[in-house]
Amino acid sequence: MKLTCPYCNNKFSIDESRRTEVLCDLMKAVAGFGEHCDLVWEYTGAFAAGLLGPVSPAKRLRIVGELRRLWSSGVFRVQGKRYRTTRDKIIDGMRTVCDLEKHGFRNHNYLKRVLVQDAERISAEGMTAAEEKRREEDKRVKRSEGENTETLTPEAMAQLKKKLGVTRFSELIGKNIKEKKLDNFSV
Image (tube, rainbow, N blue to C red):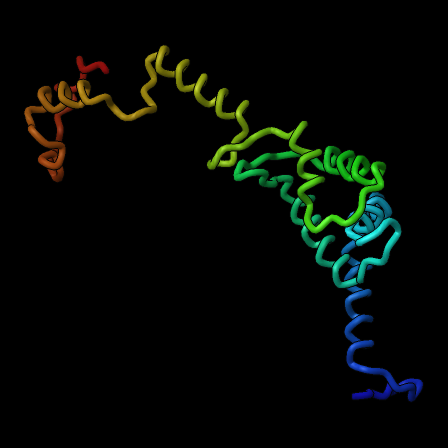
């Protein structure tokens, strides 16, 4: 099916129209990387079947979209483990991939292997190992200073129940607890 341009009366197909739209979207997406847009374009060339081979605009758009997610979050997965990296390291990783002049990639795993060397592993809570270590150290410090941010141990709960004169904490619902009973209580 051929369409007619309302401005110049030239005929074009729907496929040609779609390719034009993809190219416009691709240029906008690549331009979003600012001064690194040339590096991003070169990196997407590594997905060609052969050295300096063609990469379709639709495939480049998909690759740039995936790279955009890594760029914005800095979080990626390798073998089920999550890692966090910075934009500078992503740029260095893309340069490394481009300098090796490898081609035929089907995904970003090679880039991720380059990135994982300098990346920080993060937990399910989204914290790095250093952040988790700092959090655990803070908890230890607070415990040693007498601040109890954790739940009570079973022994401490038993002492508290005995001090309050109840067998279950649910018995305390709706009752006024006299603060005198808790003055001498320590965990």
